[in-house]
Amino acid sequence: MTDHTPTRGYRRIATEEAWCPPELFRLFRKELEEKTIDEPGFHSLYGFFASEAPRAKALASRIQSLGEERIADMDRSGIDMQILALTAPGVQLFDPIEGSALAVRFNDELAEGVARHPDRFAGLAAFSPLDPGPAARELERGVTKLGLKGGILNGHVNGTYLDDPQYWEVFEAAEALDVPIYLHPNCLPKDMVQPFLKRGLDAAVYGFACDTGLHALRLVVAGLFDHFPKLQIILGHCGEALPYWLYRISYMHGHISKTGRYPDVAPLKREAKDYLRENFLYTNSGVADPDPINYIRKVIGPERMMYAMDYPWQFEPQEIALLEDGLGLDAAGMAAFFEGNAARVFKL
Ligand code: MN
Image (tube, rainbow, N blue to C red; front, side):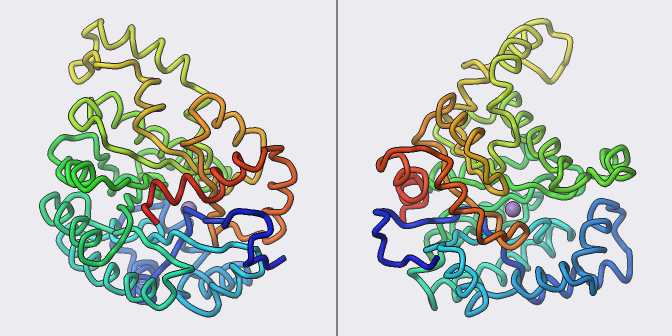
């Protein structure tokens, strides 16, 4: 179903596509062997995906490709362009200083891969979120020197969320550079993962959405967007279900924030749902289902909902045709969802 000359009238840009440099994959494998980091969620996920199981080996090969194998898969599934980001936990598994050094190397490597195929790839800059000054400077370098299109925040860092103002320099930089930050899931932190692990619900099946939705809401209620009102955060997986909760989150937070019950919770300038509508963009990564996509187009806005596949974690080449058939959008709606919104947001 390769379709490069879009008789369909739009390019398909997939906006949450994972890449793992071979050096990072080796570092993940080293951690699996040496077990120096107490993160059961990481050990559960990569204990499988760095193993010799057939599904794991296929993923390991695809996710490390920045060339022919990846492009062949894109052609097979009719994807014209991928927005690439360092796969979770990326540099955030390591101590913050080491993470900053790794981010520089991986961003250089990503930019080189994009430069070899500029019509097929664009990329987001990694940074080490708990090393705030260098994180902000690396985002700026990635955007202004390497041509990357925004930042990738791979969730919490060993249980630390970015709602603490001491880590906001990178958000300040993103707003000043007018680029989005993609808030992608990470494996659940160790003090959250146990109730999910026993039944295998810790990762993409459900746990990721719980933790990433929590992270997004922590950013909202901490007042991040009152400080940086133009900042734009991207959520995948149909917004980790937050668009479904607009009413109740706004209603309850509106009351809770006035009671003084929680010392770190204060009223915001706008309602919680306003931030979710005005400071967040959404993709359908991993959710090839027309109904939640159209729901977000309705309750958030058609200009804020973008296509993503979540390659290679969820690579089902037939999904895209089924999705297109089911969406029921007119030509302008299809063009916005698959191409136009991403072209605007990432300045392609
Ligand atoms: Mn993903």
